[in-house]
Length: 357
Length: 68
Image (cartoon, rainbow over all chains, first blue to last red; front, side):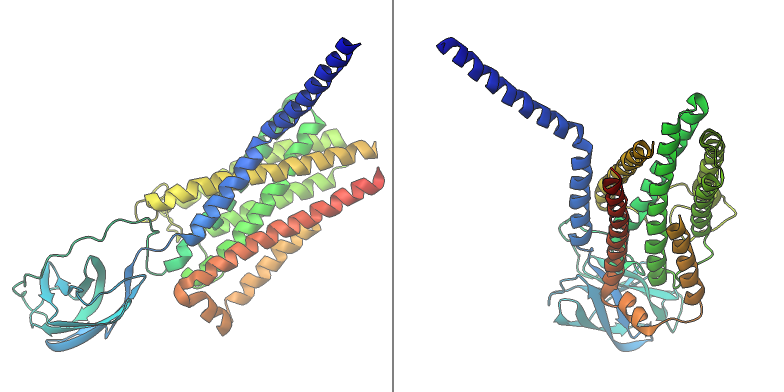
């Protein structure tokens, strides 16, 4: 009697344990969804919170002539202190400031005795370790001056910041939001063409369904990429839409995939539709690769987008390691979220098919 | 399908208008304070876009529930 009770209790406990294990297993199976949201959360917070590196953004007046000149320098995220070392640099020849008055952390006025006979048209301004290249037009040019020896400046302690580039400024953070949209679209279109190739082999309507849904979710990201890109373009290139090759290529790619969905809608027979759409999809993906990767990189075509017009990928001016360390997690996070959306869409479509039957 | 097409149409009208007139409030918003508002706009567009997708998905699943 007692033994059976004990056995029952053990059985109950093992049932509990099995249920716990199943729940754990189910959670494990969804690990990539947790990873996607986690990466997205961390990358987005970092993308919005990491400060821009200090930089000099404005000088007034913008030209110097021989004689005594006061120059007001505006910085961004700077911490000017009364001991700031300000100098003019013209082709390696330096002029030290005779006096510096700091107004606040980002404004200072420096007085120079500008000598006649500097060589280059443009003079750089430097405050401590920050340099504003080509800040001042130079008047009274000549054969060169004797360079003054200004006090040594030491580089500020390294901190984790995003690069501070003129024109872009804070909008450089969009790298972590706008660009992952395109990466996600390309991955989803890749899934779509993979499913389409499977359709050609096995005539499976389920693979056809998956191909369609991947293309649909890919289009959502394409639209988001186009709109966010348009806003960013307005602030950096001056217009919502420019005749940039990559812009037009992306728009045409979007239209090609809209045409894919139109084509699907126009064929009644399911098996015929599956094969036709699969063949079209393979061509569509080839065009995507052509428009987004090949054409923008042709030497003859210049592009406003970084990493195009002859050079492949980002270079050191467009990306640095601080951007990369946030950008790649953001890309992976968005790709995983895109795959999750695709997963939901396919499951809903399968359910709808089963209910119709 | 129709929504997607209208998205593209909407986009093309924005593009067509943008080249003639530049509203000054937008100008000042986009260029002020280190262009941080561009990032705010981009994040808002993405959240809105995902929100619209979720809304449509919600309706789709409601339909399935009604059928079953």
